[in-house]
Each structure stands twice: as C-alpha cells, then as structure tokens.
Length: 239
Length: 299
Image 1 (cartoon, rainbow over the protein chains, first blue to last red):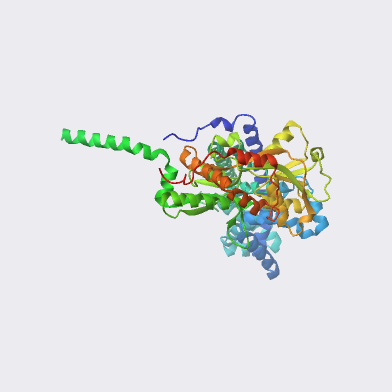
Image 2 (cartoon, rainbow over the protein chains, first blue to last red):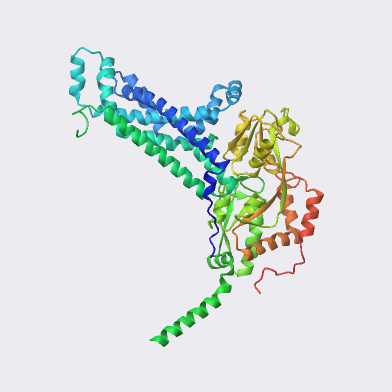
C-alpha cells in the first residue's frame, strides 16, 4: 500500500508561502500584545471593582465578568463583528462596515474584553490571598481607600498573581487564532491559505504549531524575568 | 517440525496470492461488508446539497444522485445499502476524502488539476460560471467596475483563488478581498455592507438570493470570471467505485432520470432556475457510451 502523501517541508519557507507565514506571525504578535495591554488594564480595574465597598460598583463588575467569561470567545467575536455594527442603526452600520480593516480592530478589542474578564478574576483571587491585616495596616497609616489600593494592595496582588497571569498571556495568543474566522490574516489563517494552495496541510499545521509553541515559550521566559525582577524578598514564594 | 513450517508457509503464500485480487477495490468491499456508504454532504450548497429547514435534513441534486447510486449499489450487493451522512465544508471536504473518513463527497466541487493530485473525481456532471452577487443598484456591471471595490469569497473555494490570481495578474484592482468561512457568512457581509460584491458559482449565488427575504434587492452579474466543471470526489486508487459512480451518472442520463433531477432543482419551477445551455446538453448526450441493462450486477 503506497502512502498517498508526499511530504514537502519547503512550503514553510518557499516564496510566497514563507512570506505569508511571517506576515501572519507578525499579526498574531500584534493581536496578542495590544489585546493584552487592554486586558491587563481593564482586568485590574474590574478586579478591584469586584471587592470595592460600594455595592453598585461590585454588581457592575460582576455582571461584566459573568457575561464575558461564560460566552465562548468565538461567539463573542462573531457577535461584535457581524451583529455589533447593526446595534448602531442602518445608516451607521454601513458607515462602520465600510471601515477598512474593521476585523483587525474588532479582533483586538474583542480579545481584550474577553481576557479582561479572566484577568479580573485572577486579580480578585490575588486580593483574597492578602491577609486582612495588610488592608487594616494600610488604612491605619492614614491612606484613603483608593490610595491604599494604588500604593499597597494592587502592587502586592499583581506580584502574587504573576503565574496565573502568565497563563492568561499565553491564552491570549492561542485565542488570537480564533480571529481567523472573521478574516484576520494571522498565523492560523495563513496556515489554511497555504493548505488550500498547496494541499500540504500537514506541513503547514506543524509549522503553525511550532510558531505558537515558540511564542508561548517566549512569553513564559518574559514573565519569569518580570517575576524575578519585581520580587519582594520574604513576601512571595520560598526566597 | 520443519515440514510443518514449510507446509504452513506454502499455504500462507497461496492465501496471499489468492487474496490479492480481492484487495483490488477496498471501497467496494467495505461497502458490501458494512452495508453503509459514507457520504460527505455540504450544508449550504444550493441546489446541490443543502439543508432544507422544512425537511430538516440534506436535499438537493447531488443528494438525489446519491440515492440513485445507493439504489444501484443495493441491487449489486443484494442488500439495502444505507447512507451514512457526514457534513463537510469547503475547507474540510478534500482532507476528509483524502484521509478516508468519507467514501465520496457529493456536492458541488470544482474539478481542478491541483485537486486531482490529491483525490479522484467522477465525470463532470455540471458546468458553472463564477460570478458576483451585488445589490440591485450596484454600479458593478462589467469586470472593469470591480476596481476599487471590496470583494468577498469563501475559504477554500476555487472562486476565491480565481479572484486572487486575477487581482494579482492585474485584470482588475479591487480594494480588498475578504475571506469568509462560508457562503451564508459572505452573504451576511454583503447585506450589512462589509463588502460590495460576493463571488461564487452562479447557481450558489442564485440560491443565496432566493433565500433572502427580498430576492429582488440582489442580482448576479452578467459577466463570469471563470468557468468550472463540477465532479464528485473520492479517494485515489478506487477505480471500481469510480467506474460504478460514473456508470450511475451515465445511466441516469440514458434513462432520462438526470434530466428529471435537473428539472426538479434547476428547471424553471425549481428553487434555482438555470437553463441548460445547448453545449451542456450536447456534452451530456455525447459522454454516454453503450450500456446494457443490469450493468450493476456482479459478473
């Protein structure tokens, strides 16, 4: 029985396929990094809102987190890209849809909003693991609530949650592949494009796997460096 | 002991030699043994294979042709062969055929040389034009009008490839070519103003247009950017099965069943009216070679 498949690893670097793959990788990095910044900022704010003393602030943040956490990301992305413009009425919808590269912006914002809900939960967990005496000690030195969060609690919590944040950072790069379904030409999109042109999907997908693996390893190394740089002796971990 | 070994090896050798002809077409053998034909159907390819919401399962020209195939297979093997349906998309249809998950894909797949290298095709049974669906009042009337417009196509289709190749060659300069996961999504993008024109085969475009609440708001362009023959896909090295499928198609032309099915789906009263051109009719008549009744019976 002959194997009905001839391997051709050249599709990964031969022109024009190699160029496509590189363009895709660059877009994946863009999507991941920019969405991560949105997610981090929004997530810290939301996580803090979750344990704020004012009940309506807490309820608002909880509602956001529950909605964005429970709906699958693919469904969210489709909603924002196809149904989102319709929310603005007929004329505005056509104007919005005429924006070139709309799917790129929608993908970044959608990814950021989704990941923010997960970061918020990690931040809340970070706060929960700080003993109550820290809060009381900070307040007793005369800081207001907001100052306490800004100068004492949040810096402390962020250091504690660096490991789960690393996971979220990795996940954002993996979830960026979902953006292919709304036409963003990132790594996975290019993989399928190479596959449909050359029918060598096996090589193309293996290449994509290696790319994501390398991005992931890079992220882990980066977060490890951040962790050791910002470590407070005696507060977190064994050292 | 030695004599025993020699005799056993001789018997095994004879078995291998005698068994060899039986391994000639594993697809036909598997269909006979399991009584099931694994078929890949599209869900959105009107009028060849699509889901009819009223009926709740796949219907279409290619689906009816599958019933013909199964009827002949049942008569050959003397038992009722069942269809095991699998859903395929434009992206998954070739991988699923090539890796053996499905025996045959009955839909609206274009026969191209590049695809021929990965899978086998039946005889072409339909010829379609690739053209664009545009809003009724769109200024797009000829190929030149495509300059500066936003075009859309479905992932994995020859239509998308044709557009990209022609744009690269400079036949027209669109502003951008967007890729969608399927025809339904592409049509939605057209309706909401994300693209100015959506490209696929004329029959599929007409099908999309008919499904809209107001079909008169859309029109298909008169010009075509490519002409494509449709064939049914199956794995390589299954020539007995391929011959059987081809004979089924030819027999249906000879007995008139083909024209009946065509009328049902693409005739004037069908869901997507496409008049049969004179050349198409001549092609169908000419490919039928002399066939005798009961060609499907085992000799």
